[in-house]
Image (tube, rainbow, N blue to C red):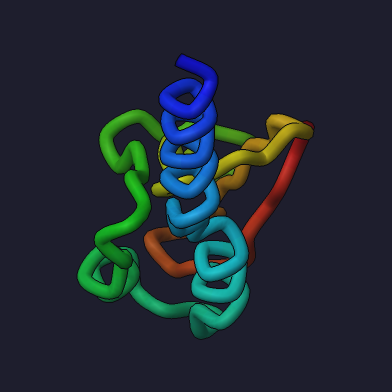
Length: 98
């Protein structure tokens, strides 16, 4: 009985460790977008490991902030929110908030 518990625990631990966390890749992708890149081009370049709420931007002054709603394998214990900021459909920068 103890051996089977140990094997189950080992299997679960291995499965958790082997899950790929794309958090850093997401930050790198967003930080490497070209300034003034078009909205449509950014959408086309969106990696398949993230989801962005393109339909419901937050409006801040004359800016549209699009929330990155999901990062595959994300284990961010701080619970940061990441946004892509556009002005007149041109990318400006990534904004992160707690």
